[in-house]
Image 1 (cartoon, one colour):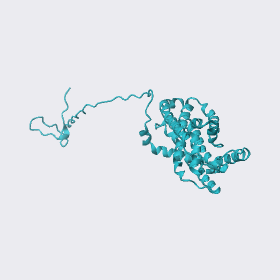
Image 2 (tube, helix red, strand yellow; image 1 turned 90 degrees about the vertical axis):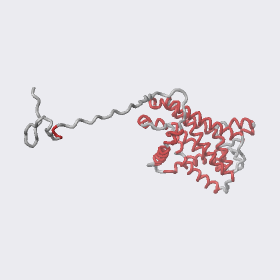
Image 3 (tube, rainbow, N blue to C red; image 1 turned 120 degrees about the horizontal axis):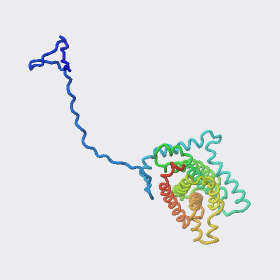
Length: 318
């Protein structure tokens, strides 16, 4: 088969192949420049598998997602009061109506001891932190189930869900606390210097609500009947907390040791702490406060580690 000779583009004649022949650069294509092979790369294999045993809390990762936490808190607050007829008044109705009923039943009819203070304000001082605790407990216990679509689609620290559910109640607490201050002024009660300890008792309430909420929301993913037991559990805890009565009744009847045992209920120390710090009640910090603080911290730490241990099963069970 004859080899086709290149032609001159100007004269359309075949050029000579001798030494003296001159060819245009376009007549023969330029050979491609050899590309140097990339140097050898080290490839690492990443294996995704469930975490075994007890794991770290990864608090640094939780801090990296702090903006998400703030957004979720703001979203929950907006949703709570959206399209409501009474708005933020719901934060006041529950403790105020409970105080009115208790003042009638226990203050007037039963003549319950109130440490020498007006029973309505004495009772309301304990109802304010209790309402914050109960609402945070209920919201955090159902938080994972309510956010099941988000858990299945996007990765983020799951701890942000129950934490945001508890922090949402801070707004309600601030409103109810303002009503408490007005009620104190109505009865002519001046806050004592012990009011500086209020942030500590508020933190103790927050830690208790979050600690118990972590346990319940994790169990609620596995056993959905937890949500049915929540109202009954909250009601039992309410009557086991010195709200309608004083914890001094325990020490007077059974002694200081059993009062400290009674303080294993963290909300007992919170209720008496608010009365002592705001109203000057004689229930000064003692064994009941130490027992409440230790129990609250243990609930939070154990609940957080149990939450992290079971976190790998949330997407499958929720």
